[in-house]
Image (cartoon, rainbow, N blue to C red; front, top):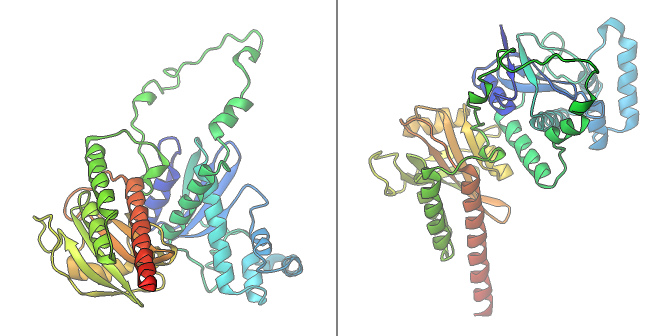
Length: 406
């Protein structure tokens, strides 16, 4: 089976999400102006990457992170060279010879994949092709079913979230090149064409006469990447957001702050729930639209608890402090949360953290219940959560100062 397309019409974010959701195994090759990049998937999980830039390689990343030194790298390369036909990939060689531990290898893999995805995000044009069930084995890949007993599979949603965050930060700081500008600068001018050539090919000649009428799909995973037209819903939510900001200026307690966030989120999602962080578990507090889908009024405290499993999406949001919005097949949500509140018709969910300082104190969960997925102004929700964090932090700090002087 083969799955191919054009990045101009289907973003790499959507492609990765699709492969994750459908649990594909294989090698995704992306070809652009700069060269070829590959990502490998095992049952929908990212587990390898190959970057066209030789400076973005396993050994380089490990040395720069000071996980290993150059001598360790040279030793592993020498072992590879002596192995002949039994030559093992670099990461396997490092692991088997005790030159790196699994956690460091895991972090290196995550860094490599994130850097590779960030690079692809800068490509405005390019093609992709999935060779299903064909997993390329080379020094930059970590999936070795024939030779390596322990696979290093990364949670695709988590890696994609971090890559998108890195992309946004680099774009904001002007550290990413504009590919379209680079193409214009490198393209020959129309006056420098071949002398005497009068061959003109139109879009119709190529069967592309209707290409401008094709609706380009925006990534649903991370809305801030592309500007969207201001819809009536966006205008309505802007009013809601303004009201929420005004209320947040007056907050004095965490429950008040969490309630304002819950009500704000509930204007966009049919079902919303506040999960309070408590040691190694989350405690369900107030909800809207879960017990009674017909109401928009917060219900009583629910009180059930969710364990914070190490590899769960909830744990990731808690540890990283990053908002999550997209399709999720997280096991904790499916087995724990949906066993209590029933699963939504679509797996698209929101996890919006509320922080005091750098510590997440609650997470607002939301989904679309039995309704279809709608567009959501994620960047505005993120701004609201940040403002809420600053407001409650300021209120708590002021209360502490008052207590000291009393």
